[in-house]
Structure formats: structure tokens, C-alpha cells
Length: 189
Length: 287
Image (tube, rainbow over all chains, first blue to last red; front, side, top):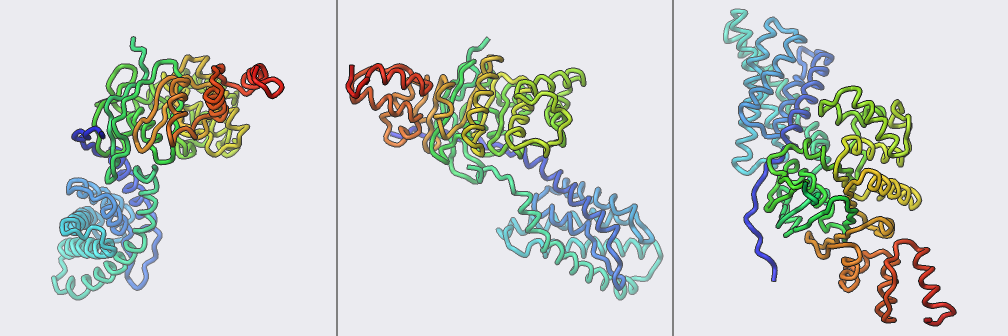
């Protein structure tokens, strides 16, 4: 007769605690390089950094504090290469963007849609929309521009960049996911 | 001082989001022994190796019950990197364990991470390369080494930490028979020279017959048979599915013993078998 299986103790994987740092750092570094070299076409440049942290957020499902940390680092990395009138605004905008990505992913998981194929697209779009809106609003405040300028000039650009970023996030998500899960545990046996 | 190198007691384990992979494992590996682990694919051999080093469950995560002791101390709460100083493991996908550009850097990586002085690191790198038959290759780029040499290099990087226990997970799965025999001769020499406890997962036990002192046969995540080699082999011979795992020489020996009601020697080499068979069965008839 088979022996009764005792109560099993659950252990969190320590592997993932290092892997999220590695994958986030790697993608943010790629984002900085692309952000620096991407040409401006018709006043619009995709924000690679937001696309990259949207991907890592989808992959690693960070908590709010970790998302804020990622957003802060992402903002810092953009500041030196920023071509805008107020580069430090990027810190606030990326904090908001990363937090948005984190909350959206949590929301999708909560309603059991975590594996829905278009989650990266939606997360990339809204993270960019929020980040861009925060940044352009800060810019309006700093430069003393009226709200109508933001609404009529800046918001349409933000929406276009958000669409571009959504596509980039969706396209890059699967390859990065494949790399991230190359060395799985249970798959080994 | 404990004479037990490794002990697993009532150990169960399941990877995250997976069924139970190891069931009710109770196993003792004595110090200085050479233990072979065999069994069909998916029997849990690799997972058992990982459990002996703490990689399972503390690195992979998952669910477990029971205890694992290394040199008499339970590993719960210990860092995997500290356990690695006592138990070295070489994975079947050995290339994935390589992290550096040159042979010297590869071996010194773990030593430097453990805070050894540069002089001590140099001495250990030199000794480890000598041990595996790659003397003075410190500055060789990894791509200048053949597959077999890279495997020896990885063995050197495990040996450089001077572990008490060496675990090898199917180390010859991608090698030709000559390369496989040569690697196991090397492992046996290290086992003897350093009085090291060795645990090897191997499909083909013919390679290990000359060296193994103990044998463990696994099936469906459980230890079906374990013990000293001869004792375990005799039990395995009567097992409906695991008898095929025995070395061919021993399948022949145990078959002859059973059929003819004789007791043959504890063959480890073909020469021994030939000599004894000629003595017993000269001219086609039993003497």
C-alpha cells in the first residue's frame, strides 16, 4: 500500500529573484540605446524605455514597490539623452508609467486574463499614454503653456507614440518571453 | 565527525506547477563511496541530484517535505553557494554552467566569489587543471578547447572548490564510448586520490561497473532499489523492469549463477569474467 504523502512545504524560487533584475536591467539598457539612436520621424519617436519596462512588467509581475523602483531607474536612464525642455520630468512620468503597467498586469491577473495574448499591447499602450500625459503636463506647467495646447498639440502626439509603443511591446514580448523561460524547472525532466 | 556524506530522509518534492517528482526518498550516501544512480527517463534522477545540493527546492522553488543533510548538517536555511563548497555538481547540460572566456577565469569564478585570495585562487586553478589532465591551459579561450576538454574544464572548476562530494549528472551523455571511459577513469582517479565521495547519474552502468561501490535504481520518482553494488544488483536482477539497467556483464553473471547453481566472482572487468568463465566452462562443459 502506498505511503500517505505528508503535507508539503511551499518554497518560493530564489532563481526568479535574480532573474527579474537581470532581465529588467538588460531590457532597460537596450531601451536606452534605442532611445538614443532612434530618429525622430514627423515629430514622433517611439519611447523604447516604456516598451521595455512594459515587457518586463508583463514577464515578472512585480509588486508596486518594485514597479516604482523600475520606473525610477527607467526615468533616470532617459534624463541624460532627453531632448526635451525639462528632462527631469521623465522621472515622474516613468514612475507613473511603470506603476500603470504594474496595476494593469495585476488587474488582468485578478480577472484571470493574465495569459490573454494582447495584454502586452494594452499594457504598452496605457503605460505610454499615462507616462506621456504626465510628462507633457509637467512640461506645460514648467513652460507656462495653456491646457488647450496640451489637449490639441501634445495629447495627439502622446496617443500616436502610445500606439507605436503598444505595437513594439506586443511584437517583442514573445521573443523575450522565450529567452526568459529557456531554462525552466519542471520542463527539465 | 559524520561518516555520512549525504542523507535524505522521507523527502518529497514537486516543481512549481508540477506533480510530485520525488516520492518518499530515504537514502544515505556514505563518505568515500562511489554511488551510481540509474533508472528510466523521467524517474527523477536529475531532481534527486539537485535535491542533494539544495538547488531543489531552494533555487527552483516548489513544494517539499522531509530533510536533506550534507555532512551531518541539515541544509535548510543554508545558502546554496555555501552548500556548493561541500557538494560540487556538474549538470548534464554542462555548457550552461560555463560563464567565462578563458579556462583560468572559468575555474577562478566561484573561488573569487567566495573571497579566496588571488594567490590561493591561482594555486587552486593550477592544481585543478592538473587534476583533470589539462595542465597549463589557464589562458586558453573556451572555444580553443574541444567538447571533451570543456567538460574536463568544468569538472576542474567544480574540483577547485575542493568539495567533499562530487555529483555528476549524466556527464558522458554526449560523448563517444572512448571519451566516456576516459572521463570515468579520471573521475575514479580523483575519487581515490582525494578520498572524495562521488555520486553519478548514468544510463549505461557498463561504464561504471569497475568503479561503483553502491547503486541506486529509481523508478517513477521513488528509490526502487539501493545498497552496496552487489546487493542492489542481485535485487535488481529479479525486478521486472529495472533488471535491464544492470551492466551486461552482471546480467550474464547472475543469469549463469541462477541457471547453473554456481557462485561466480564479483566481476568488474571483462578480463575477470573471461578468466573465470574459462575456468568453469572449459571445452563447453562445466568443470
